[in-house]
Image 1 (tube, one colour):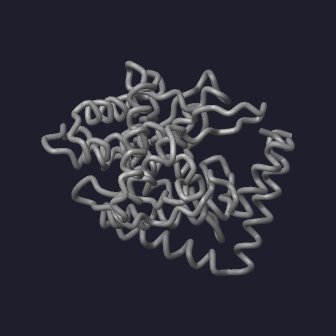
Image 2: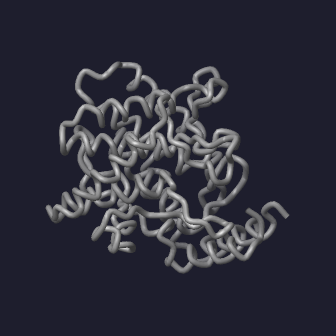
Length: 305
């Protein structure tokens, strides 16, 4: 992922707001913290930027560096979650149908152990990730909410069970003493947005009736670990993308704010609101925003060079 033409184009599209992978994702508009409803982040622009997919059985494809287009689980899950929020708002059946199509894809492509191979195209030795598992579970539980098909619920629980396996056992979680870190990339340091998307899926499981108490315990454990790590996910002027020193792009900084707001609604923990407010203030500073942009551009140029 060095400084190739592919990555330059990808970065340019992201920075100009034309990348469907990096659309606005502010806090969700229809979610509940007591039942499965809308999603915690607003993914509707994933759908409105590719409305043609609503007219047929096509699903979003990801163009990879060699020019091929592949079915990328996270893109499909996010499209389905965005479609469901649009259905809740409009009651237009085309959105519900696309949600269920995405759910069926998730069922068909889920491995027997509950995993989806998310990074097969770039990290074949490390194809699984907590973000994918969490978002897949969130999608399936919204399908279950609509249809009461217990197959969707069972598949969602399988996805989270796989996610909660330790990395040493092939899963997506790092356990150390009291910490539970949910890893978007199982061979790399924690990525904040991926960790939080995984937490959203785990939280959804806790909303199911008669659910095993271990899921609530794991949610609280990982939420507390995230609170401890938050100082490492920020610097004096901006939020950080991960725990190995990468600063967040403007897109990810916006996403971090929305995720903090959602976690505050979900948990009532004032610390998340504190960070959301702090990062909003940073975003409003011309000096801080441009300093972060320059730092991110510099890191991109040096990446894998």
